[in-house]
Length: 247
Image 1 (cartoon, rainbow, N blue to C red):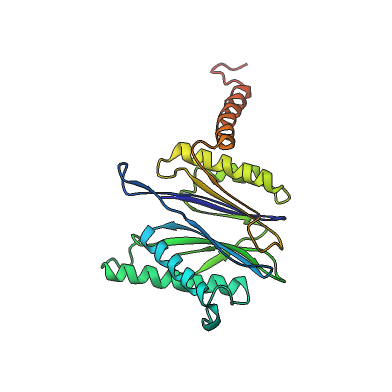
Image 2: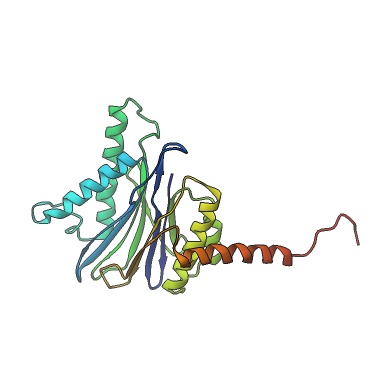
């Protein structure tokens, strides 16, 4: 299992994802799930993956290959003219990879080899865009009513984002909000774990504005986790007391 979030704000896009992959409590590994490609001054693209590791690695490997010799590849991520077309191409590749692996293993129609992807980025002259790509290859785009996407273990961290999100918030506050969301998920589900990867994509910059790997001994994340727990306990004790007796 994993947990990844892509969030749109007015200033740009913030991405965060964990790195844990496990097939049991005694078989835990760390694999990067966030990848990006850029053309200075022209485009910035990033993806985060969740689902079957072999499937997601196969998709990312093919995307990497398509960026190496873009001059003779009409479907290269570095040549496609719009983010919509990039999302379409990644969707086709994801669907084909999922189907190939399911067919090869005799599990047609099953979910064992499925995966999903968050795509974020901007091409010069256009707005930053954020997509959630499903294993079937179709996708949806973030907008005013749906400003963030989650993939993987989503349920524990979602209420935090829903209550704290503000489209006009700063990058710093957006990062803080995602850290609280991830802390809540880490506390509730052992299949999501540190380290976390963070990337900030500022509007019209076409390169990562900020990148960071958050490890278990990261002092800021430790402070967020501790103080959030204290704040929750304070808020709980400040609520009106319940009584069994009518007044």
